[in-house]
Image 1: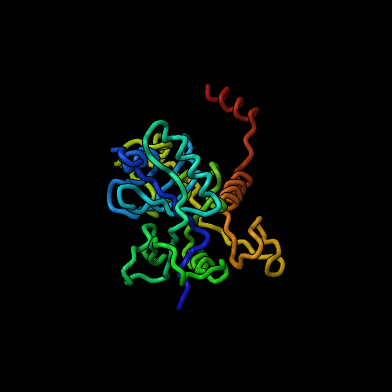
Image 2: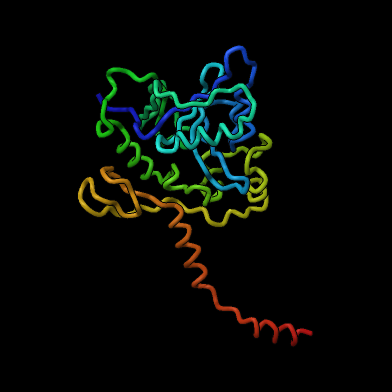
Length: 265
């Protein structure tokens, strides 16, 4: 049977505490870029106040609460960040290792299509089963990564950065990762202003980086050893494009500007 589990993903559960009437949807709605009060799942981001990406994840319904499908490596940091915004709300925020994320490269088998792009296939969250593969090498992570990169869809902190890339520069609008009608969220002011003024000038698809070394050795671009996949780095691609544009622009002399201003007067 083809493996479907993604070991690189983890699930965070947000739920009201017992005997509490706290609304988990309202809590998350005021933090993330997408409308989590509508149809789920949705892909969304948690941003800095300046509108730069800190975390990207998929939100699923979870009974009285919500489930977050996120990178396993940053799950604890995401729990800490969300807990910072919780204040005195009676909401529990914690990893749920009883659940796992699964993926298939096609749609039509009953699971939900990826909310970013239909061609990404379908995914679902399910209870960890005894029949699941026990090792990461037997999961679907490598196949998912290759499939995603072939469609040039960025994902995760290694590609989107840690508070370095503006959310709209991550193709968030094209990938249904932002709502411009839902109301306020962290980083909303700058994101909405960029969209209104059409100031998104550095949207770059992920750039493939070559591998170096044998299996288990270091990868170009600071990748993780032992992972057989092509690395991508949106941040480097953005820097190279903007740097090349600056180098190609003609130099401007302040003396020449002063002369022009005097002649104009």
